[in-house]
Amino acid sequence: MPQGGPKSQTILVVGGGIAGITAAIEAAETGYDVVLLEKSPSLGGRVTKFNRYFPKLCHPTCGLEINYQRIKKNPRVKLMTMCEVTGIAGAKGDYTVSVKRTPRFVNDKCTACGDCKDVSDTAVANAYNYGLDKVKGAYLPHEHAFPMRYVIAPEAIAAGEGDKLKAACKYGAIEPDQKEETFDLNAGAIIWTTGWKPYDAAKLDTYAYNESPDIINNVEMERLAAHDGPTGGKILRPSDNEPAKKVALIQCAGSRDNNHLAYCSRICCLGSLKHAAYVREQYEDAQVDIYYIDIRAHDKLEAFHAKIKNDPQVHFIKSKPGHIKIGEDGRPLVCGERTIDREIYEEPYDLVVLATGMQPSAVKGYKPEVGVMEDEYGFLVPKANGAADGEGIFSAGVASGPLDVSMSVQSATAAALRAIQAVRGS
Image 1 (tube, rainbow, N blue to C red):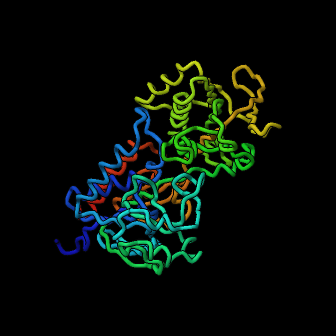
Image 2: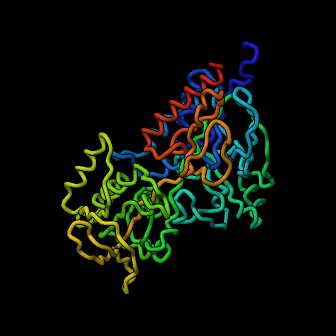
Image 3: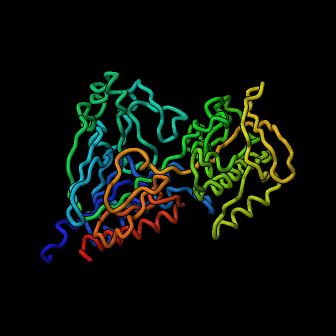
């Protein structure tokens, strides 16, 4: 190593969604040691919660499982879950990164047998299904979780179930006395892939999200349609579990709105087209109304748009609904004015789905202060002349801007290359 070169050639990837997984694998398979940090109990991020990808509508597991195998077989990747970065010091080639690890209460002896779940009496909101149902206090994050290890909810420990859960495990995998801990890592370069979260639909007062269980957001719709979701894949009205055969999909719910998200999130239109396909697959007599300002179906995905538009039971209504109210029968009533013919409408639905936008997770919590900077919306973008300043921190995936899955993967590959160049001293 030339004098004054990088002290560490380890690459730290912060965030284990599709972008983080991609960046970690690309760097490791090129021959570099990688530490992959994820704050939740398992990898996959938002993608693993999707029912299907567009445009082919295949299950996300198809792509994720291959990548999990690549991680499992590569000794250069060190995966650390339940971990968050709390501070970064140093410079390119020699960063000291402070990390907080939240207790999982389960060690790596876990075989995912489920004996701990069987004895737990605690019930907690199921984060995988966005709180639409509940799971036991000892739970597997989901059926394709990686790592395939159980988690003990803090609520179960607080309820005094620790000893009972420990006694139920014949492998010695339960550690109810685990505490939060902090430690430092050394890295030569850092890739920030902390992803996104759906914009809070409760802030959209005119759309009555908190006033009816039959008004949901787009990521919740993904879980309703999923076979491992709260309804076993049946698209039902949450209020009474009856089939949702008349469905409204409202585009730009809070997006392109200076009071909420001023930007377009690129993929919301396509997500709603996919949701229309879900409903039509389940119910031959379903009616789906898509309320839109514009339809954004970029590149080859225009063919997917055309396919959905050709369905006579899917109606495209050019309008931004003014408000939603709850009818006397409890059904949501979508109210507004059609843009083209100026007709006023007040239409009842079994289910209303709000296409909320993608907000960067970096809006809250720690974020790096060198190498990248927040743009006006909270996405992390390169600083002006960042490369010339010699900084070795890069953002990728939706942490850097609204992207779909394929674009996130491309972004992560590019970030991995830049990180490799940084640790090589190029």
